[in-house]
Image 1 (cartoon, rainbow, N blue to C red):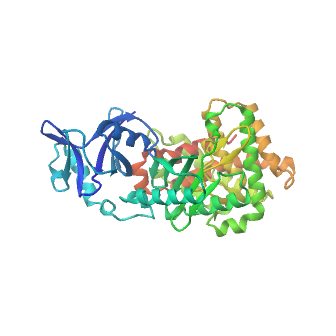
Image 2: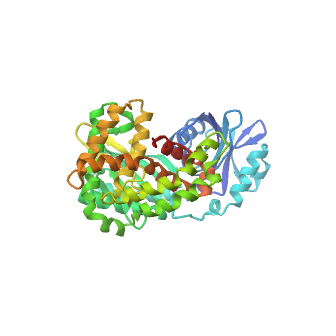
Image 3: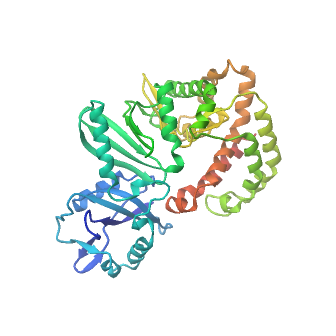
Length: 446
């Protein structure tokens, strides 16, 4: 898949947008890249700097087309940092009214949509302040003050890594090391609260926090020396990672009330059981007949299993394993590990739930890494369950783990089903998440 990026780059001081004047043919700046995660933006800013000599950050993505001949078109809005001086005679700043005279009809439509969009005129949705021009300058000042107050030197560079509805992430290169800044929307403010709480009570489980601005939902954290777990093939590090996470869950049983007060919702098995039936009949989510959707046979099997799955929820609830902190998105990439430390990042989906539901994305990640075998999976499960043996007898733990496996994927599907349509339109791969996770649930039913 190739991605053609069309760029609406705003002038830093004027109501104008950058255009390319190619012998009288006026068009938006554009470049083509390979397919990347739709949240990643560092390569977009790098391409703009390389091609047009401008320093930019991405404010937001505006559209994502369907694929045609293995090509999709994405439109992004960017902010320029600097004085807006252009180094090439083929580049010009166009006023907004002039933009409707662009040569390409699709680009004219993109500009018209941008101009008509309230967000394009400055409104902030769900506290996503990073979509507004001038936000980065404010953040840079805050980061500089925070590092100076902590005695960590001055900022050398700030690189925007991610920008999408869930967060904006910056890498901060400073005189005394690297740091990461993260901002989240109002709907995910619990991430800052939970991360701060864990840093206070379990400082070895999360990155070191340098500064926070809770009212703005900002976190500044020290970079960790380890690698993401999905880049690691040493199974001893995988075992250490799952064991560390399990110990954290076990310890958090005593902290459930505090975590609820910080915004962690309760995902009960009773509620899950009630949603299985409606989910199994939601053709819009299951997408039968579409390339990545469930097949007719899979739909029929899922619907036939609804009573059995509900019964499994009841049996798992009766197993005596206490609910505790559940990460909600525990893919291997959210572990940073080395031979000395293991930390867990990105707590935006944290909740209070059955602890064993956390293993679903880890199982998938292990398979995707190419190192999954029944023996290795058994080793990881044994390392994980060791943290709970003082609460529940080992035999019951193994039974519950087996029972939870398909339900954990059902739980993922239920949560993916509630993705906002406007977000899914910009990140179309999300449409496949519900059928994909339900297919995994079926695969875990003997």
